[in-house]
Length: 212
Image (tube, rainbow, N blue to C red; front, top):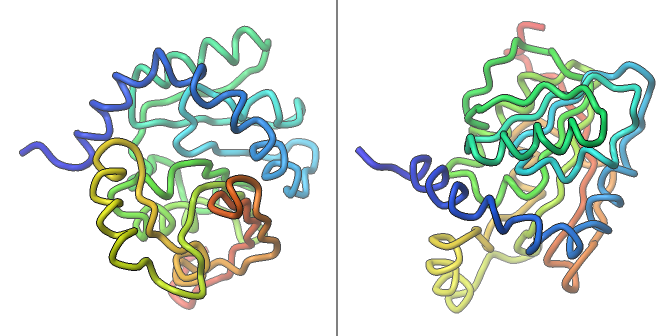
């Protein structure tokens, strides 16, 4: 049965040839701000979830072990090409953000740029990010969010029916999602469009049921 994951894979296959032209310049500064919040240390193992065409790669320090995943093979191919052009060794794989094929506690840093608002189940996606981070891990998020202090109104929810089908959900709230997934927010900064886009740095909080 055709589902939301299949639709995401299909539409981003169509978007892949145009993605850089539409987003690279507009979102360059927000990416820099978000990645600049990370406390980088040499040799860190880093995971880019929903890496798209690899637009984050140039802003990650060179002495990192970088893994990049995306649901769409066309995006992964472009991400690999970007890494090669930059002479960066990046392991690029096709993977569902809601079912990561990595062991528990494998990464020091997880980056989720422009993915929380598009994945069918952000709760599951953030649970996976929490699982694959080590106990001192950092989560970097940059996306569009509804303000935390009030839920989306009827007009925004109605408009969201259209935006969700074409590109992105505009009703999700960052703080509840991150807190419920087991993260504490260290920094939260508006980066674009009067605060619609925010860059957040979060730390993993151990859960009682964590095995590691």
